[in-house]
Image (cartoon, rainbow, N blue to C red; front, side, top):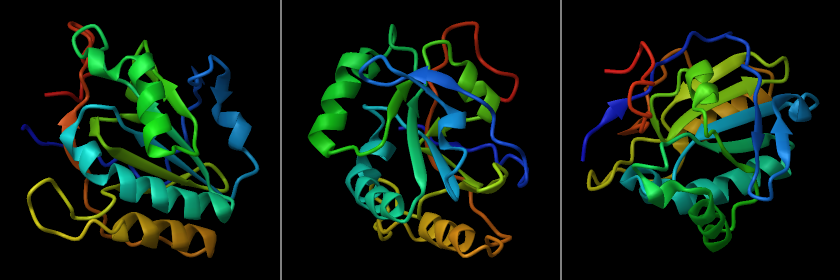
Length: 192
């Protein structure tokens, strides 16, 4: 299983726009969350063992964040021709099976993933109420087989800081996971 780190975009970067379909075909826009005190954008997929490893804990944490007003979206950016387990029909099944309470969006063109400079699944981007990047990186130190606690500690600290109007930790660790499965010939300049 290969490991790819997130790109660690500069803090303070504005949240890129997106307009992507959810599992019912409704287009969800970043602007739909403009009034939220924070927006968590997660790049995940159905098949990645790193996502599978954290999925249930992540889903539980997200419910807690949403109860506190945090807007949350997950985006699936992988090439579904080469990775059919990530196709929208499977996204729908995974969302239902794991009780997703957030929109699970499909980035068919992969342009949104490129705009965010997403590199791996899972990859987390937390924006403050002004739409500025406050945190990017790992949910916690857990990885398949490493024995570290799967508790969402890093992401939880960041969300709590943003909601309290405080700065997030200066030292942030990249997320680690499977590389995004780019369409052949469509890999971004930061890939590889």
